[in-house]
Length: 353
Image (cartoon, rainbow, N blue to C red; front, top):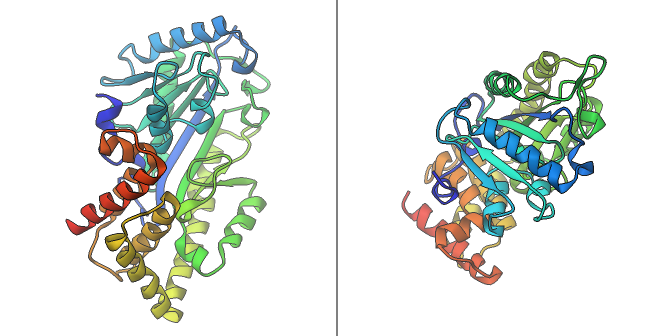
């Protein structure tokens, strides 16, 4: 399977399945690991970075992690392919924008539930993605991947500190647990700051759709732990499963009920205006589309509109992103052409429903 083939469908994180998927778009667990005997990426020479890539490629593509993996050499890939990886949540923006003459790679599982970035901030950034609230299942999968890799790769580890990482906040277990949440009602009721305050109180990071440094477009927010030192993987996992996520879901659910009971006409107006614009506009920008699809998704989940389904909305959230849009068109498009093509694609997909 190639990047061109996977770009024609929604990724694992947007399948719209899994527990509590009305609010929890996806669950992700990431592990940071470094090879013993090599400097961290930021201090390593080009030759050392290349040796890390070669060692990791031999192990990752050995077949021990399953069949059908895709290995993407970022130094040989196009700008469009690199952006495609970011849009599908398979690579970070920092990773694909790194100096292109330095060795970088991404390995992608056949079903896109896992990906491994090589030579990002750490030698290995392993991540598992699951649709809906599946933090426990994601942890089980990434734990198995980590064990398999560690059988053949010697990771940098200190008895006192745990796994050694380039960023001090990742030292210890090296784990980052995050969930992608759709919080349109909290935004509409002006209570989204409640989530930010709660996150700060619980020492969590709140980021946008594409992680660090990105804005919360389409009312999509990523919430993750900020530190790992001194806390076990299971402690962090339990914290998310039984404290963090349930609290945010409760906030959003309460806000949705308030909209239905107190501002129903305003709610319906936003939902049906979104439908009208999406099915009739001839020119559309990315940010506008994400906002309108967010309102539409809320309307479907609340039973206020039945002219479209969640899988279609989730698919459009991804296919209307710049790189995916150009893949669908089969050619590179300038910004003005993308805006027209985006509107055309949306009208076609929604007219079929």
